[in-house]
Each structure stands twice: as structure tokens, then as C-alpha cells.
Length: 175
Image (cartoon, rainbow, N blue to C red; front, side, top):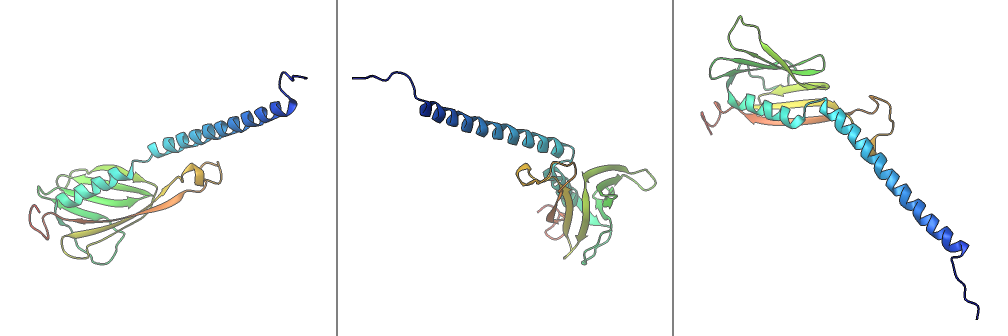
């Protein structure tokens, strides 16, 4: 009876193949994590759209009236008049969505960029007291959909369609 002690060359090759597959999967996870970290860093430079839409919702719903109403889509500034007479203007300027607030005529407006990379801005009032907004903006695609690592390559267009009611119009002062 010949007892065979130790491992054969085939067994060592199988173990080596399994280890290389595990290392390959681990390396792919590290690379994917780094891509996600880069996408998160890029997203920080542009305010979250959730906050922008929340700001827009607050401005429109707290307005007492619009400076003018238009049932046809327009690219011009949306000018809201608040209960205390403050004018709030939202307009597209050089690829930025800008919010300007003027407390009284003759005073310089408080201007702030609320969203960068905007390619289109449209608004209308289909019925009195209702404002429709359409915003198209550029974002970086998710890392798994990005085909190139070049900076600025493959930016995606996203569109937000929003409908808000002016609380002073339609359903009464506070509905």
C-alpha cells in the first residue's frame, strides 16, 4: 500500500485559480468604489436638485401673485410678488438658474445661483394660480454608464417638470 502524502500539482493549480478569481473580484469592487467616490465629489459641486425644487416650491407657493401670467411656455424670468411686496425673480443667466430677491424698488437685488449647468428654463401658467416649470440641466452619468474617463465627457441632460399652486390663488389664502 502506497500512501500518497502532500498535494498534487493539479490541486495547487485549482487553489491558485480560485485565489486569482477572488483577487480579481476584489479589485473590481475597489475600482467601482473609486468611481462612485469621484461621482459623489462631482455631485457636491452642483447643489442637489431636491433642494432647488424645494426652494422653487417654497417661492411659488408663498407668492401672493405673479407679475404677469402667460399660458404659453416662455423662457423669460418668472417674477413672483410676495405678500409683503418683495419681488422674487427666477431666470436663466449664462447656464445658471439665478434667484434674485428685491425688497423694494431701487434697492439692489440679492442674487444667488441656485442651479448650475442649466440648458433650458421654461415656465407657464396654464390656469390662474398654477405655475408649471420645466428645467433641463446637465449631470455626470453614473460611473457604470460612463464610457470614457475624460473630464466633461458624456454629460447627461436631465429634465424636471414641476407644477405648483400659488397659495394666494385658486384655493384661497391657505389651502
